[in-house]
Length: 162
Ligand code: SME
Image (cartoon, rainbow, N blue to C red; front, side, top):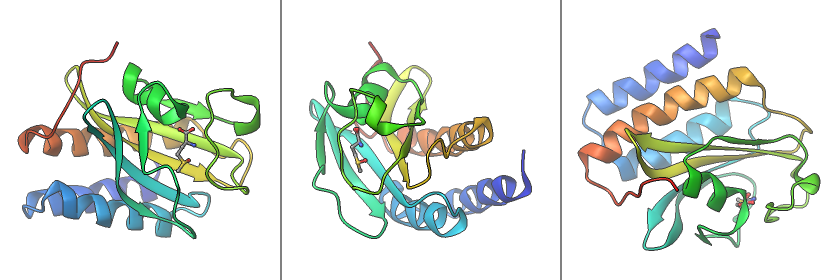
């Protein structure tokens, strides 16, 4: 794994070990990811809430209107419903895509899971086409695994993937 990815995981592990709550960590994590990675132009954490997703934390140049996303809508809904990472290299070519920002070209959504249960997801928008590679996917999978363990400890709402 790349050095910067390793450093971000170490940063996250330290905060978890220090006993930070999921809520506080979500705020810190979106800011960390956006400020450390050039192509991560907007970063959000959506968490399960009833039958959909609720935006818990975000960092970026503008707020999104999509603060609540049903599980049958958007790339975000699809990732949470299936528990799969969804890497969209060209958002205009993906019919699931719900537009938030005119500048977005690519999107990566990585579920926050523990075992079979899905708690939420990290959603990253990039202004660069095909911005996300295997390295980003592996890094964010490791990042979300750690968030998932914390979500499980806090017994946050979860669902089984379909
Ligand atoms: N594009 C997402 C909606 C969330 S915004 O990107 C912040 C989707 O298709 O689900």
